Image (cartoon, rainbow, N blue to C red; front, side):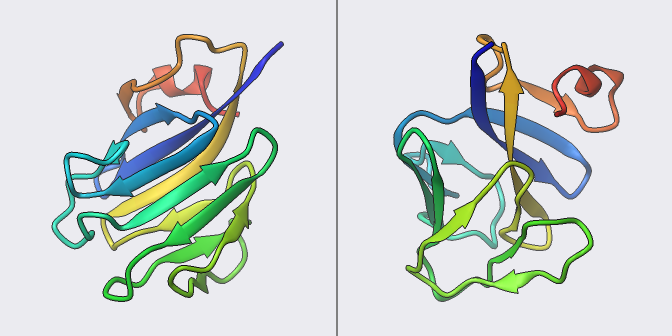
Length: 131
């Protein structure tokens, strides 16, 4: 089975949308020209980027205005990211962009059509795509 990486963008109400990740740079921010546009007034127009080389993922916080935190495991304290510094991320890594917006890197097995889908996190349908 093929493993597909994607970013889950979760808002404060628990709703989320998933974006399939391709090799190269993925730009994230509130501007419409981003690969992953986020509707959150706290987030900069070009807030961050994610680089995927086919094997590893590096996350970059591109702004000094907003504070971005990362958690590799649920039970650890969040790490404040230094702007323009690469942070390697792995399956399940949580990235807090604001009080209202969180990203999670996830992998999906055999999910060719799993991209840019939107669900409520509390929906029963999410169990089919959570790893």
